[in-house]
Amino acid sequence: VTPNNPETSIDLGGNVIDTHCHIASPDFLPLSFIDGILSNMTLALASQGIRANPSKIRDLYLAKLQDPQCDELVAEMDAAGVAKAVLLAPDFTYALKDSRLTIDEILSHHRKVLARHPDRFLVFGGVDPRWGKDGIDLFERSVRDFGFHGMKVYPPCGFHASDPRLFPYYEICARWHIPVVLHIGGTCPALAFDTASPVLLDTAARTFPGVNFILAHGSVSYVEECAMMCAFRPNVYLDVSGFQTAESAQLEQLFRRGFRHKVLFGTDWPLFRLQGRQEDCLSKLRMESGPLAGLRQHELRSFMGGTAARLLAERAQPETATANSLASAQPV
Amino acid sequence: MNPKLDAILERLLREVMPRSALRLTLTDSMMLHNELGIDSLGLLSLAFRIEEEFQVNLSDYAERLASLQTLGEMRRLIQELEGQP
Image (cartoon, rainbow over all chains, first blue to last red; front, side):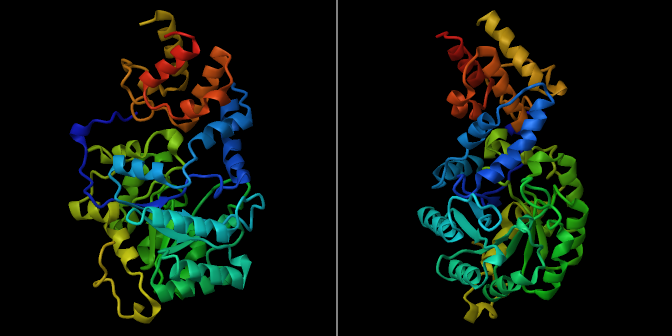
């Protein structure tokens, strides 16, 4: 229990970038994915003696996932002081056959949201590598024509991060100087967990030293392995999305590991809307006694958006990409 | 104030609040999540307890229940369910 007292809160500055958000709609999260998540909640409620009807749990959960144009999300970001957010579009359509839309349609919708809120979002598109050449072409189009800024890879769908079928995608990321976000750790019970370890990224990270890889939920799942990868692989970063579900001490310990410059702020919003508002989530971080208390000012700025801005600003047309460098990158 | 309503409210909350929050003096402005320590599972638990207490269909109130932020909002919802002004 952490009462929000604005008198003792840390100023996070005006350039906060939430590096891990999604569009809130069952159009992009198959019901089998949602029901899998909720099955664990049903079990937990049963342990309290509550016989919860699963369809009613779903009604409650979906009540907060009806924002396909992201208008509500923008309002939440305004209230929370978040300047920009990265919308991640994982491809569940190959692994979960009850997906409402094709991956082409999903990425096209993200393009429309980007056009609707051009100054607030950046999009990382995902394509399951088992879609073959069509998938590679779609991904390249999403970067070249849609203006997407990165790739989202979801290994629990049934492939690991160094699967050679992903290499053509990483080659595109290398040419465009755009980062790759990988889901790490457990997820919906309908999917595999054994492909979601961060160490499985190592071959790809070594093969593509020019591509920056971001381990999503790195402060929550496989924390030791994520820390090892970030500490020793120059092109591996992590985001802390989902930190709301773990103890603050876990985040504090991560910041003591010597790679504060590689830790990115993220919330996994709006999937945690049943836990309150996005600004509540940030207020926990802001507390003087919270996990950010030990950071220096420049480290705080890096964590809240500076590092993300630098990674995102590297994006460049393939013809000119080689002329860019970290030093010349401008914040987005 | 309605003593009966207050008693129901306190009983429901006590079931879903962490023990460390039980010593707090409850006020309507308190945030369910940040101040009373009610997480997403706690909110679901609260919703099903309200359904049972007031014999209503939870799905009819899904948006309201999922959007509860403060103790005052919860009190107003319960007042409505009890048919009080």
